[in-house]
Picture (cartoon, rainbow, N blue to C red):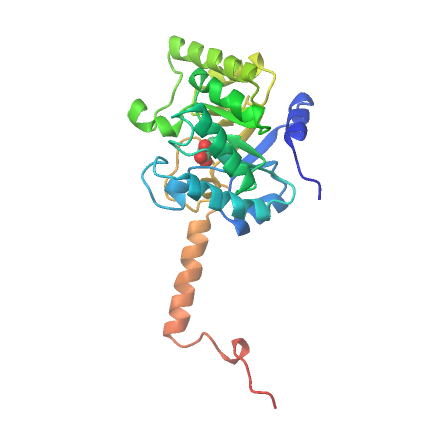
Length: 268
Ligand code: KIV
């Protein structure tokens, strides 16, 4: 099976084909998302919330990100794998950003990295690109700025903040990113950004006019209780797991599982 690369993603955008991305954190789920034909798998720092049970993404470390990116990369036969730079791994210096991106590629097998932020990240982005690593940007509700925003708040609602987002998107494109995540911004702003840059935009809570979409897989599969307005649930995994596990507990307790069909015999 052919691996998707940045060239395929850019080609899909040029030919007007929508791009799909989902988050993945482990081998089994990555294999399923890959088999379903997902274009890109993001090993997002949302792992802090959905895998580790943390309140925000801020406690995720580079080691967490590397370990989970390794697992996802093993399951991704065709989908392109994007490693996420956690909080504190690229904000302190350009050198840190380059060194930590190299580790995500070299140890985690990421094929590109994603980092949050606008023009303040240009120097880091240029350094990472110089190291030969494709970069995905991320604007709007950037969860690593949780405390600065005062929570998970929709961004770009005022004239002024919308204008800033459009300018930041252009600056990131100019720096050389290959695609841009737009999170929790009004659809009109996402549409204007998508129309004013040539690279693909990947929306999450940014309306239908982006070049592609991303969701947190646990949210869209109904595996995680929290549901933002923009999440469509395509399955009810929590409900299915609950009833399967309740059934298992019942059968073990009433001694109907295992019967002899699930047991080994001594050779005759
Ligand atoms: O960390 C993540 O999963 C993300 C997506 C929500 C875009 O950044």
